[in-house]
Image (tube, rainbow over all chains, first blue to last red; front, side, top):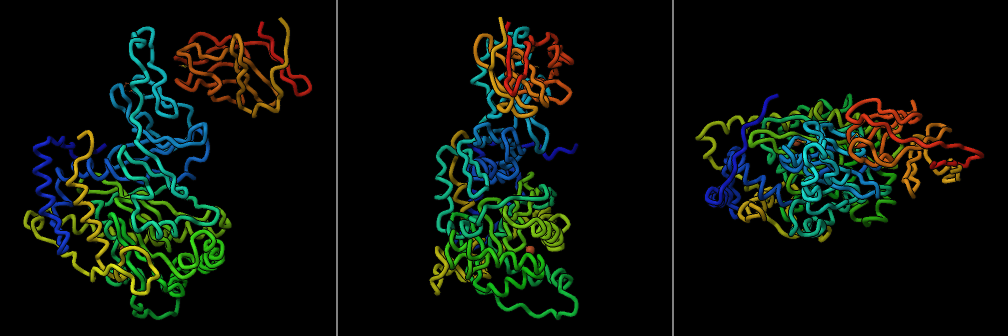
Length: 443
Length: 102
Ligand code: FES
Ligand code: FES
Ligand SMILES: [Fe+2]
């Protein structure tokens, strides 16, 4: 098994040198990026501590673990965690690491269990991560060890947001809702679905040799690339006999706050056409049929006059609502990410609609998706160029868009800019910079 | 001692368990329409056997270290446990589960 490069342990002196570096690499005012943020192994470690060690992170969808004892082996940054349904129906999240010598408590990706027995010396933990048995206790004097002090390390807080399970290591983290800031309306609209949602078809995992921030940033703020990166795929997806026309300029607003970003468009008719092309007529009609019920939950504007195009919840949860792909950009060292992707559907949708969604998502955004491959190729390309020292010192331009703050039509809440902007990308990097400059507990 | 009614068959899911409190504490295991009873704690390291995995071959697997026991005899079928589980006589009559704690 190939191991990625040995991690670096940061010291206070190194941290403060890195802070200076971060401050000089991201210019939030002008919108420039020093690309060492994508490649430097020291910054990667600081990012693990201060971004992934502090933010609310998506760890699972509750539909993966419906019954007591069901578990999903997830990650919070580079740390492996177990997400486990308890006997009382609640969910526990804890570090997937034995307190004896640190082997994983559980090596399966998902399943059902009564307890987690470490494969090395057999220490055993209950569903909540509490140490319940030190093996051969009588013979090895295990009674002298207070088991209550040697349970698996638990996250500080857990939140269930319409079926999405989030966790944070930070005791002082704001509530999940507060962490959404001015973007809350948009996330509610996307995830508060009539009857709730579920993920189907298993999780797909694939590695892209590029930093995780390329995926996150693009989903937060970049529809700009579509007509260039994806033109060949878009042509290939055209129905027989239809001419490819220049797409009309995308109306709508790009929302941003606290590192989050995404686009909402009022061009519902056009979006429906795109849905018909990408997901099939039946799925488009099904979506239309749910709008009245959806409006009861989130209001007319969100349910009937808006389509959500793309979004990234800081730091690393991406969604394309139209293509129904939900994913996590898992960091894997500075030079690679592992994408974990699911097909997200309404729990109450008819089976044939769910099946359509699953198949169509595979064709567009998934390991086999044509659009997915276009994007991954660009990110890989950038990362490869960053092997060069000259290249790593060359600033990137992140200045597209007008930095507007208010929607002139008054329809979309919070700070927003035009749909084709990099305002949300600037927001992403400036939030990232702010977090990187603030120590977390336990450094 | 004699048989006393401790549960009704419907209280126990098939391949499920049911705890009978008291002295000694006992676990009932249901396999189809049969019910078996053993001591509560595993003979290896004291795992609660009501958390065990019940097999349709009349076995239970310990939740902690996966030793299997024969529910009919209590015999330990594989390590790390070697000592048998104490078993108790059970009768099912008209849907009532009757246990003799001895
Ligand atoms: S490493 Fe887990 S029991 Fe030793
Ligand atoms: S406690 Fe039952 S096998 Fe170890
Ligand atoms: Fe793309």
